[in-house]
Image (tube, rainbow, N blue to C red; front, top):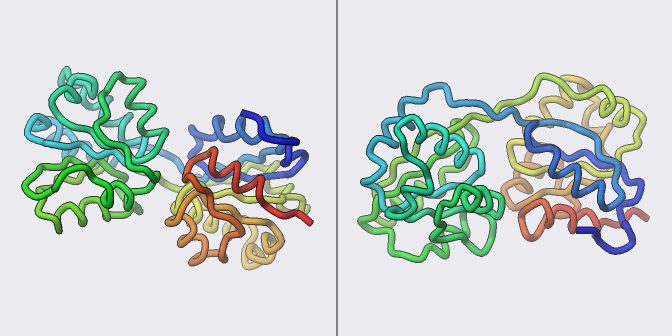
Length: 266
């Protein structure tokens, strides 16, 4: 969807994102006039050990709820289920599924999986706050990233008396390099915006900047406007860089675009 007056016309923007997820973001921002520079900041791969996930899937029928906080978790759970002749579509007939975020929910819908609950805001805290049942006595299965993620879902449900099985379904790591075109744009001072799509993209981007630009990295980006996709990303940005200029609301790509459109470039 195009927004009024192509407000990002000729603005140069870096969108930090997983390598395999960059095309959607690039398309949305280009439709609104921006020049997008690639800076893949996450590499999504398998967990170190599939065994905990496989063991959980063998007893999948014993759970009351499966809670997905990312599309990556959905993909890998679905793939591992195929090994035992199951699918999220099949099990959603008897087990309730909750999804954090529009993209996570959309992927489940594409798989014909029934979704019982999507919180009003696209963050884990909202899922806990608005959860439609008393968790006490319920059994939860929570597939998650192996390292670097928050444990708020598992911790909150446990505190409320639920039994929680939380296992690694994927891992996200830092890429080894920055594309040369993006390095050149940063060195020339022509980048207008850096948009961060998760707390981990902030950390990995900082690590890449330190690797390529050394102690000068912070000065290099001091005039670039920073936009974050949500509250946890904002906290990470404040901790490792500085307070961002805007935070997206809603906390998705469309919200990120709106936040960039609201920036003042005067």
